[in-house]
Image 1 (cartoon, rainbow, N blue to C red):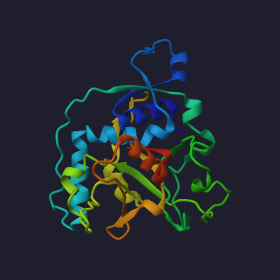
Image 2 (cartoon, helix red, strand yellow):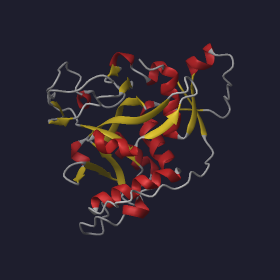
Image 3 (cartoon, rainbow, N blue to C red):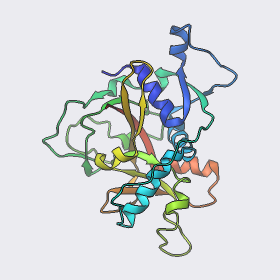
Image 4 (cartoon, rainbow, N blue to C red):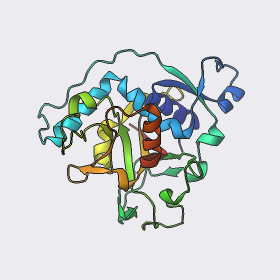
Length: 272
């Protein structure tokens, strides 16, 4: 089991923010309460917050170069460029752990190796073996729960559920590098949007790494999502999924598109 405090640190890394919780502030007198500065982070704001943070992270540009090279089948032999980190002011977020986490859906995959094929949303589901999952409290947060496949089952899909993907790479940050890669016609640019992958071996390249101040250990962190197949484009032999977000989309429209197309349900951590 991974300490919940480390999950808060992982959220901070994903959101480029200092993340505390109501419960942490109550139990630890040394935790500074910055009520005037802190912005409450709700579960439905997690994907937009992660994407916004990705757009301000210079290191993330190496991820965008990687996607471009893969889509063009031109992966460089010498690896992908790593740019220096440029300090960006961090936000201050606070969460209510009781409204953010769903411990009944925590799962320890760290010592598992799958010998069966699993399916979610009628598509193959590669379970995150080697990782620990913190369940996120998404039940009843959206319109219905069918997308999550809440009926008990092991390897099989439930009717109406969505397939699983990992992480989510910045919609705007990638635009300048891969924004013109796909132009199917009518001026529509398919490169702009939210990228994720059903393949853990691909997702690991986009994981963020941090050293925990709680225990001094080093971890990688990835988001586990469900993707609405109605709004998804597939590339690179179905290994890269794109939720297109057209240029000029307003913030309100963008939030609506995210809500209907990609929803997080697990925070994955792996000690390295």
